[in-house]
Length: 500
Figure 1 (cartoon, one colour):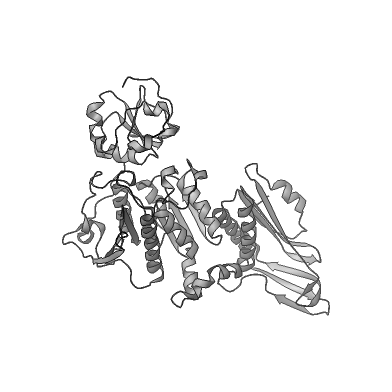
Figure 2: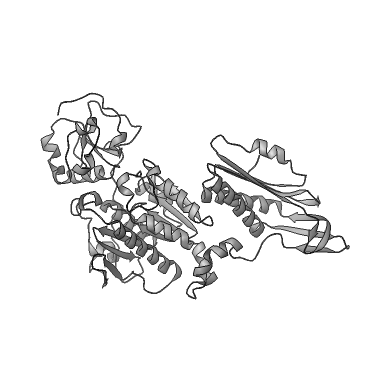
């Protein structure tokens, strides 16, 4: 059956249900809107629907596409009647297929709300007393559905927001790069606030050491892609927004295809080359960027836009710092509350920029010290001669290619490959014997790897494939050394065993 259709004939519900199935779906929910014999206390003999078929099917298709994205549906379909309907006839049928029942139930209700609000369909009631009346059956005044109004009611009371601000927020398109310690709280509260369309990109998988600060994940998610899991949680948190997941690493090609069309970008990454790549792309596109970073008990948040007198990231640091100038969370440690606090500040800054509220950080950097409870705003300014003002902005720097320097699950291993564990010692506690037998180089000894292990090829392994990339960059991408982008526990067997 077609995804959305308009029918002049009685609906064959049994046929719809027979055709509407998918072996991947664990839940199938359908709704039938039936013609009743009364309306507002008056008896009804029959009714008629009039519609613009082309517009109905086009807009109906868009509604179903949005529903699939919002609720991670396996499929969705709907049929609306036109012409004369008798009492008891089915006027509209909606079906939703999903892995779990909650998403399917919520999707059915959301689709019906959207059909009533957006489709150019009009209903004419023929009452028993002989009168005929057009009644509301579509194209409601723009605004929130009643259930969405109830969801946002407490914040809509705020005079700084109100229903108009809520609707404006609902039209916002926000890209969040990174679903880690910063991205999780930022995403959660942007979704709860009603940012209408969220896109999240992250190529990492959930690791046990993530869970104390990456609050969208649970132990049941270990090994799953962060972006997909985060999107699923956000759709469950707020069924009135759309969330799109991109399980992959951000690079120049991805930005060229997906960046335009967003109103705002949040940089929640922990990788200097990625930060500069994203900053430069947003600057060229004229899209505001909210950037944050954390270290142990401290964090900072700042925003950039070409129209701001506060300058760009390169006004502060003209070139990306070296990969070893700041330790990762695994190396330096981080309090989960630090990530939560700074991520929330990013979300609040996003609201300031999207809703034109005062206090934004386009000219300031906010410094946060959770140990002392102190915060400080430092004014920024354009650095004389910076490329952001001379017009000689650097061309996009290419990111390291997935091959030949990177190896991902499913790739063929180079012949004679030997694994190297670059995690910290505490991460190897209670590890299986095959991992304990691997050469071990914690963070402070990364630079010794090329000299101490002469044989090639080598494959660097860590918990989730993030530090392997950092290590490879620190070493300068030497020939014969590869970075495994998955978990050390998911590495395939090497083609031959080499002596240590």
